[in-house]
Amino acid sequence: MPEIKVLPEDVVSKIAAGEVIERPASVLKELLENSLDAGAGRIEVELKKAGRGLIRVHDDGRGMDREDLRLALGRHATSKLASFDDLYSLATFGFRGEALYSIFAVSRLKLTSCRAGADSGYGIEGEGGHVTAEVPAPPVKGTTIEASDLFFNTPARAKFMKSDTAERAHLIKTVEEAALANLGTAFRLVIDGAEILSLPVLPGGLWENLKHRAAAIFGKSVYAGLARIEGKTAGMAVYGFVSRPDALGATRANQYFFVNRRPVGSALLRQALYRGYGHMLTGKHPACALFLELDPGAFDANIHPQKRDVKFSSENEIFKTISNTVYEELLSKQTAAVQFSAPAGDNKFTPPDVPAYREAAAAAQPAAEASGLFDALPAAAAAPADWRGKDLAYLGQLAKSYLLFECESGLLVVDQHAAQERVLFERYLEEFSRGAIKVQPLLVPLEAELSRSQMETVLKWRDWMKTAGFEIDQRGPAVALLRAAPALFYFTQAAFTEFLGYLSEVLGEPQAAAEDMKRGVIATMACKKSIKAHDFVKPQEALRLMEDLKKAKDGHHCPHGRPTLFHLSAADIARRFQRSGTL
Ligand code: ADP
Ligand code: MG
Image (cartoon, rainbow, N blue to C red; front, side):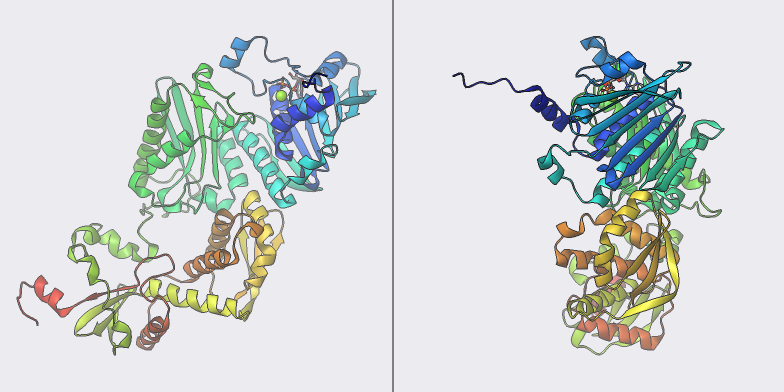
C-alpha cells in the first residue's frame, strides 16, 4: 500500500477555499471585485447574520451567458488572465480564477446573470461545490450572486469566526474601501434589512465624490479634520485626504490606502504618511484616504492570498513622493484656508503636542518652553518630595492654566488641568473597584456621530460600559447616545464624540482585554475629555484641588504621565538673578 494518497476533489476545493475565504468579508471582497471588473455602474450588497446567513451582491455589469455561468464556477476559470506574464501587468482586480470556485465549495450558492440585450438570463444553484439546478432567469442585465450559510460544511472553520459585530465591522470596511476606490460606481449596503450606506455617483467629478464618500464613511467629526493633498513625481501620483495635524486620532482605525484604486495594507505607505507629519506627529495617528497611482508594472499584488499586501519595485521613490507631498501640503495649509468643511476661522495650525489649554500662551511666544526658563532647570527641579506635608499659600492663577503656590520659600507651579485629571482618575477608579460608581442620568442625552465601523466597536462595548457607569444607546446606524454617565465627569457634545471616537479606536474586543487595563483606559480617556480648558479657578477651589492631590497615590503625574507640578526653589530663583546667596 502506498502511503501517499491523492486527495478527493471536494477536499481539495475546501483547502483552496481555506486560503481564499478566511471570513465573510473575504467572500464579499471577491464578489465586489468581480462586479467592478464587470464594469458595474451600481452595486447593491445585502447581508444577513453578519454575512454568515447571506451575502448577496447585485450588479448591473456586463453579465454572463449560460456557458460562462457554468465555467465561472470551475477551478482556474477566469476571463481575465491568459498567460503568466499578464500577472505582472495586472489591470483588473480579480486574477486567480478561483474565487467563485472557493466560495461555492463552502456555501450554498446561487448565481443569476444576463448579458445586455439577451432574451433571457440564467441561474445556477448549488452547494458545497455541486450544482443542483439550472434555471432561466428574467432578462435583467447584470449579475446577482447569493452565498448563503457560509461554512455550513466546514464546521471547524465556522468555529474560528469572531463575534457577529467583529465580522460585520470587516464587512462594512470592505464595502467602504470599495466605495472610496470606485467613485464612478454607486454603492448601497443593507444589513439585516437596514440601509447602512447609500452612495450615489454625484455629478462633479473625483473630488466631489471623494468628499461625499469620505464624509459618509469617516463620520462628520473625523471628516471635518481632513485636508486635501495632491502631488506628483515622475511615474507616480499621490492624492487624497489626510488628517490635519491638529485633528489626529488615537489609533490607525481610520486609515485607508489604495494603490491603483486597490485597497492595500502596506507598512511602507503608512510609514511614508507618518513621516510626512514630521514633528507634528506625537504618538497619534492620522486618518486618511490615500491614493497612489503607479504604472501597473511597478508593483506586485500577488504575494498575499488576500491580495492586501503589495510589493513595489521602487520603494524609495514612493516613500519620498508620499512623505514630501503630505509634508508640503500640510505646511502650506497652516496658513491657507483649509480646503473644505472646516468651520470658518478654524484653520489655524496647532502642533498636536501643545495641549489646547496652553495654546494661547504658546501661540504668543512659541519658543518659550524650548529655550526659556524651564529648559535650563535640571530635571530634578520637578517637585520637592515633601510638598505634601507642607502648608501651601495660594498665590494665584497664571494664564487660566497654572496655579501658583508658595512652598518651602520657593514656588510650586501646578498644571491645574493635569492635577484635576489625576484626582478624578483615582477617584473614579476607586468608586469603580468598590462597585459604587455614582451615575448621573442626563436630562438631554448627548449625541455622537460616528463612522459605521466605530459604531460597531462601541456596540461591542456597550454592556461593559454600563458597568463603568456609562449608559450608551444607538440611534440610527451611526449615532450613539449618552443617556447617563458617572457623576464625576462632565462631557460636552464634542467631548463625548471624541471620547467614543478614542474608545472605538483604542479598544479591541471586550473579552480580550484585562479588566484593569479596560478600567485604566476608560478612566484616562474620560478624565481627559471631561475637563474643560481655560477654567478660572477660585482660591478655595485651588486649595481643595491641592488637598486632593496630596492624597492621590501618584500626585506627581497626570494619568498620561505628564507632570502635574514642579518646584522652583528660592536658590534656583536667586541663580536666575545671578545672586550667589538666598533671597
Ligand atoms: P477571477 O475573477 O479571478 O477571474 P472568479 O472565480 O472570481 O475568478 O470569477 C470567474 C469568472 O467569472 C470571471 O473571470 C468572470 O469572467 C466571471 N464573473 C464572475 N463574477 C462576475 C460578475 N459579477 N459579472 C460578470 N462576470 C463575472
Ligand atoms: Mg474574481
